[in-house]
Image (cartoon, rainbow, N blue to C red; front, side, top):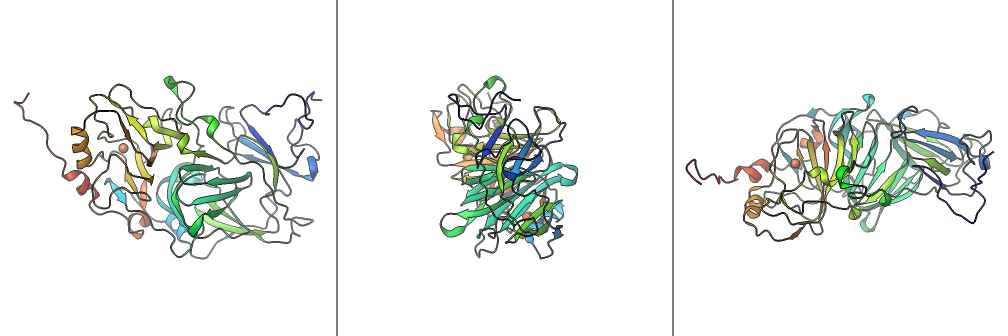
Length: 459
Ligand SMILES: [Fe+2]
């Protein structure tokens, strides 16, 4: 028998676990020193949720034990959702693989409150296939109404990284509740059920999201930076267990009808069950939803000359099987000081073996001044693999002549990037039907760049 009893207050108080977390919404709901007792405490069911293979290496292994009123399997079979759904339609559209640089005007709001969060997710671009657990989906969302009161959703296809741009979201998950506002991000792991309400006046929300078909996000390695910096582990927040009692004597005898929707291989299915999916009284493990305040990012840059690669701004990374190469990096460009001497301070011109999808949460972006439409909050750009890009003409000329005193850039601004080792295809909706692609982005940005070459005989 264990010599410790976590349920009895002692003189010494501890947080419990080694690289894992737990939460208990009712005293003694977590079993003592084991996971699956013959009779779990309080008459709960024990249910395991695995985020990796059981046998994944210990440093990658993600598993959580849930203690709930009824198990997740207690529902009638799922049926395909047959009603037309534009969000699903974007999943199955032909993808266009094009080398041109693309930029989008701000995506539309859901002006007529037609869509909830799930219906408002539109696939803009992507790569790979969830059946093979390879690839990513890049989305924008716009919603003008809450999900129905008794509705929940999960994706079997991947983890969803959520980047709100306008409007806060109250995300009720099986693990507890999270408030996710612009300048915060959240990760909703594969399989976790949730329901989204819009917070704030006007009931409008808009933002970006990335679905990761393979692996999970983790903090980037810090190498010579050392043990602190960039996004610090202590600043990530996980919800506390928070359950509701909405059930009958059996799984079939509940009072209410809960509609559960699932995205499965990019199709949408639903079932109606008689009990709430938000009945988890306690949980412990290391596979859970979480959020992070981007304002807490510890930004690092040069204090001598040149500037580091943009990977120095990585918040979270989802590694591929190739060491140092990400299926998806989530990178931000927050307010920061530029002090580099004899340095071209904006991002340099480059062609990248990775694809770069950028969005703007708020403010302006220091590498793009002019151009029709511009790069503005709620819009986006895509510079696919080996597509050359960099500052537009005016930004280049300005930076070339600027007096190099210490300068704060990006005040009140935050651009971000989904960077991937994969070539992404743009959906028909993203390229045409959304009607936001800016004509002449390339022309307005770079066709006017000037020749500064002084000739062979110059010194
Ligand atoms: Fe770039």
